[in-house]
Image (cartoon, rainbow, N blue to C red; front, side):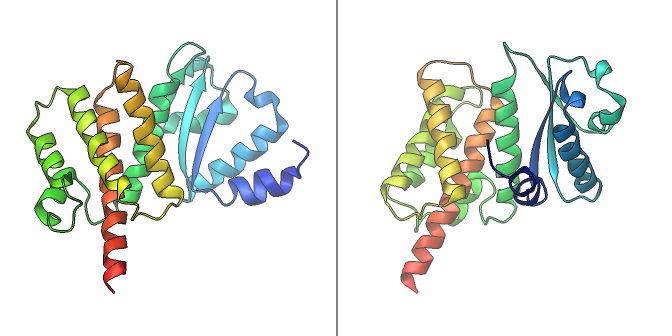
Length: 213
């Protein structure tokens, strides 16, 4: 609050971002500022310059205003004050980590086993191999092993902190906390951890390669 909206929300915000979380409620069209920003987001979406995550909050899709009907072209999530936000968060981070993986060497956990045994930290290879042998439906055990691999890799202190590795750490810490508390998890969250581990191992291998040069 108090900052210049043109600079913070538009110039440094919506014009520069690659992702946009758009929350539509019955009050959205009444906000001049929100509608201005949504107009920019729609323009960037039409040009293929932004990925939009639409969320319809306590509103029937049939009641989405005509001025925002372009939202219906996208896959959107419906949430209310009681449920849906956790699923939305997992969906968004899955998409972002999936995009990051497009620039990584290892895009699947199995790729790590087949190409990087010699350079992996001690124990990580065995953890990942065990992970691949566990029953597909045993989600909690699989998540625990992915978390164990994450702990071993981060304990090496060889990965430089940046916005991506910090995001990966947040993903692991949050999902393992939910598993430890016996909260229900699904395959999307497992997929999210697999993405995150592949990203982290790519950063680890890069750091090892740099240290050898």
